[in-house]
Length: 171
Image (cartoon, rainbow, N blue to C red; front, side, top):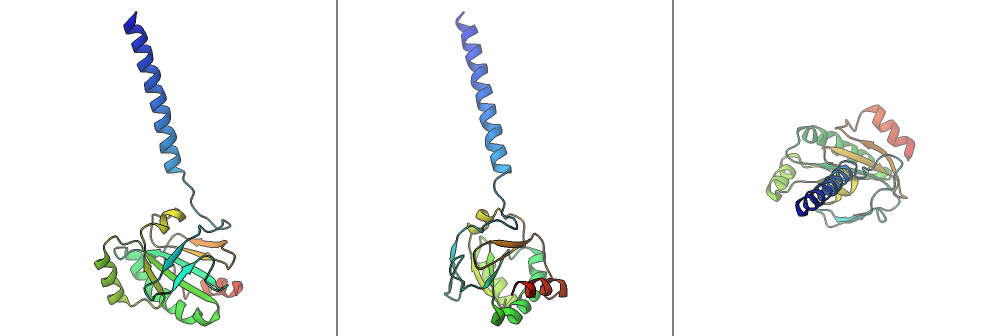
């Protein structure tokens, strides 16, 4: 009699644990990923030049928030056009912030020395998670109220007429 109760208890316990595991896995897989139309997660980051950037303090400008990594080939290929874009739109109401997800600070510094990005850069290991970003590069166009207007989940030629036309329509 004792072993029947023990067996039943173990079966129920295993079922409860399996259900809990499925729930946790489902939640991890379907965690919130920021898309166009969403409010951008609030963050504050200090760029390498000492300027603090947050959703609330980029001066009413359009924020181009780009997540990248030094080991990411598409990120390397995107950097020159993003620099040219930043240079072109800096005085037109656009702030470009590139946030590196590099865990190795030396790799980050070597990237900066090699490619000289002409936009605000910072290294942070948390903010990209708040956006649900785990593939790089990924870029968010965020308006002055903090709303995500567009998301690019790939490298972009930032000087492409289609891209610049879209940005011009927002200014």
